[in-house]
Length: 449
Ligand code: SF4
Picture 1 (cartoon, rainbow, N blue to C red):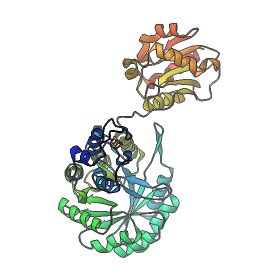
Picture 2 (tube, rainbow, N blue to C red; picture 1 turned 30 degrees about the vertical axis):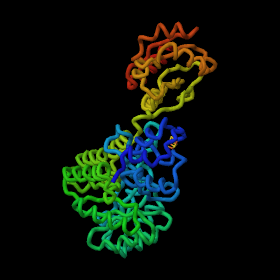
Picture 3 (cartoon, rainbow, N blue to C red; picture 1 turned 90 degrees about the vertical axis):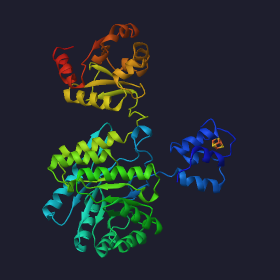
Picture 4 (tube, rainbow, N blue to C red; picture 1 turned 45 degrees about the vertical axis):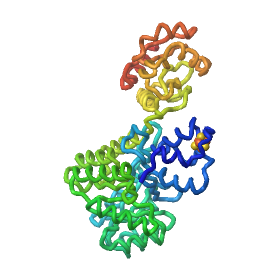
């Protein structure tokens, strides 16, 4: 049962020393109760009080870690139902799948795809992070899981109803920390004991919340805190309902038996490849921690990775790049100079279109606290009196022979005023949309401007 802010306040030192970063102990207590402050921020708690409060400030959804020790995948640790309340913590892991119906030739094709397929988006490299290796045959399970470890950087999820096969495969992956998937109500102990013996995370599966809660309770009773829930479902409606109810049970009811990340299998739902991609997107939006797909078409994988990236950014902290002068395509003194803001999406879109133009250029990126061009202009941050000093301190004038600054078309209205701010510079209004930048630059290059 969660404690209220008042209940927490009663056990705090009440000195209002501010060492936690909050003005009063009451303010800290309220934030702690809301899951928005870290318990460790108060250095003055008695150990027994700290232990009690650790319980209440623990994330509603427990942290689960699996994969190689050098680069483990982390899921869970969520504390809220809605992203705007705080943030979602760890991007869902997209997992490919190999099972007994996968031919050896297809295994090779999947391995190559997992090795070679990655996408760079707003500064992040996005890729499939794990492989479900499913088989009831011990030799197949062990051989394919070893191959995933040797041939790719992916984490392994071992899936089998055969406890002996799971144990043998897990023991062959020592140091790689596979996630075990298979503990149902029947035969629970045999598989859970493997997780206990090797300190591995475990997926429990059940077709109702009651069964999942029972299995969660039994895991906790065995000392297994790293658990993932598989709500066995047959339709998108059932999957969505189960995932929402599980998150509500964890966050609102603080049900510890259900306070674990969820694994979703949209590939099992009826529908074609595109529809299953849409199903996967829905389940990513509603709390899936791991999403298993059997379709590695980049046209389907990239949207899911991009969706996860977008949802799991901190809404209170815009993604941004450093302020500065960025050379794109080996520019020289006569190359054009373009200006934009340091919102990551804006920067990478503009930089990408300059690259597409094949016209080498200088890109001046101004720190406006991660806002896009129009937002920053409306907030009074991307205005002539701020841009002028930035251009001067950037040192761009020493790098070019032509003092000509191309500003985004959306802020054409600041052109004259900016020219007054920038002594000796000509200010040119550029393209409004990033997609028009290549044509804009090529036309000017051909005209010798
Ligand atoms: S650091 Fe602890 S004692 Fe000091 S104000 Fe914060 S909660 Fe109160």
